[in-house]
View 1 (tube, one colour):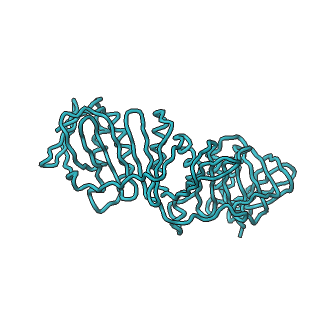
View 2 (cartoon, rainbow, N blue to C red; view 1 turned 45 degrees about the horizontal axis):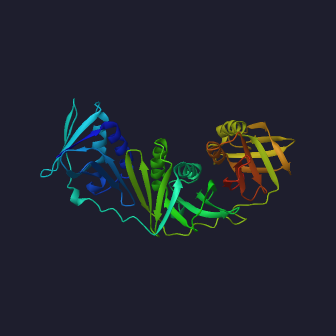
View 3 (tube, rainbow, N blue to C red; view 1 turned 60 degrees about the vertical axis):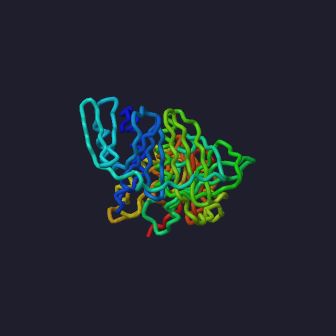
Length: 381
């Protein structure tokens, strides 16, 4: 029972499927990937019981077989092979896989395919089509706003929803860690009914990797299907098909569009060069990296004075030019939040919309209201 498959393509399949394998599972089967050769294709599956993936790719099948094999071991072996093609065969009685190339010959034990976890049924009730690039961009723009360790489980998940705005319905991504919140709205319009889905961070980041890969292979769209507890992303990529599914969380995401959370009326708007801002913040970090990366920004006479205030390491102050609309202002903030936002910016100038030194401020790209980072100010103790 054997197949012949291109090594480079097999490496791509393994790279994607390995992301869905359980990392610290007590059951050995969950550290395996499922592989089945049938007719003229290879099907590979992986799961950690929260997220699932199925990949189907064409290959030359001489004899059919099915097995589960340790994902890391299989990946390490295939990555070590220098030849362009590899032959894989399975002894269904002993559950031993043989991997042959012109130079190499490996034999590794597996577990029967019949013992593998059944994948969930793909939802059929709700369907929509997303632009692959916008899916990747949306996740990338907001993913830095949440930490892995958080006291609230809802704050380790991403909100993906539709929103009516300016007579168009847009796709919106939102993430928060309770100290900051990032919202990104796609420029492309959508025509679906209202929906609001909360997806695990680890799952959505793995799906982003698939979306990035799909975009590199010129797959312009992805089919999305969802129910109340499951969402599926169906990619048709060049020479293979990928179906990635993940459980949804049944939770009410915080109502972040209230004025006290995401202000819409401001007393001051500041515009400064993002590179000047980032360099100034990194200088201040020399003194404040141990105290919440605290920086103080004081605006006067078209200048932003960025300072550490007084610490046990004394003070540091640096000045950069700034455009100011309306009132001068002073506020404290976590400098790390600003540099995180700068890293994802598409323009050269960063905008600070400020109410006062007590209420949340909004950071934006210049002339872009689709991308907002809401940050709570800090009070220097």
